[in-house]
Image 1 (spheres, rainbow, N blue to C red):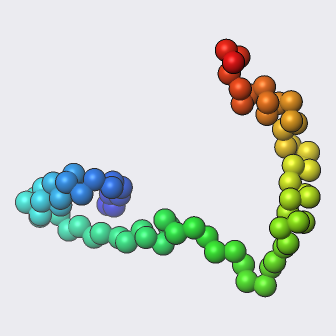
Image 2 (image 1 turned 180 degrees about the horizontal axis):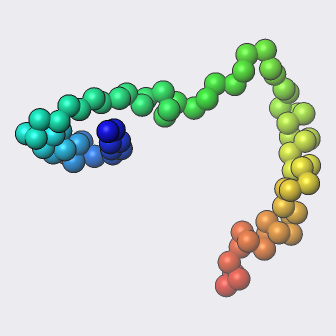
Image 3 (image 1 turned 30 degrees about the horizontal axis):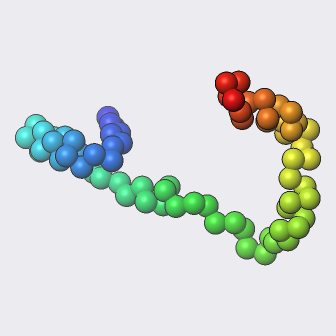
Length: 77
């Protein structure tokens, strides 16, 4: 059986590890630092900033300016 515990709280992790040791449970800690690193863009694929800015918002599912404005500002303003 495999039990996965994810936490950033070192105190809680230490308590769990101590309890596992007391109960005779084998614990293996995995290093998930690779998941926290932002993905690297593929090599050889470049795009100019001008092209990116010109294409920004052109997709059909991109909200219109009016939709963004209606949700961005509270009605009390």
